[in-house]
Image (cartoon, rainbow, N blue to C red; front, top):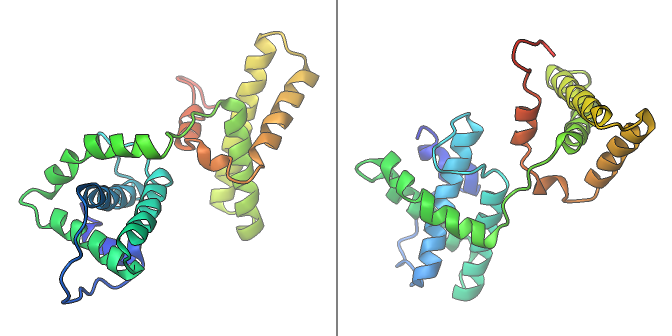
Length: 218
């Protein structure tokens, strides 16, 4: 867990200086949710660094949502300041870090915490080819507007074109006309432009769909 020591400052956005005042009393549900929030933050940072930890779904969006919702609820229910809740979560992080086997301690939270996540934050939808083509093309346009034709922008454009081409071939094989194919792709793009829609999808699946076919180079 190479990011664990950096987590309080990077994920919570504050310097982890703990007050000397006694820790507030929490319910079992509140403490469990804060512990899961800490675990989600750790795993999300590991995933951002390229490590896919077994038993954990992608947490960049869903974990952050659970983290934020839990913090707000504990603040409201306990009458606590935001810094107090941040300190409580940082304490859970430090408890995991201080465990005899931090990796095992984190792994033990996967099943119960993911169950709590699924019960409160809906799992991400799996996008199809047309939706992925739209998502990655929109990502390309955003990066291109900011960076010009950078390597990242070029890669996203290539992947979007690959996905669109595969969708065209799939629809054509089903008997769709060129006009119908263009309309389907345009409709998928239009549906993705509504605020918050893209965040509902598992974007990592788009990269899986864009992988080269065996024995091909696109």
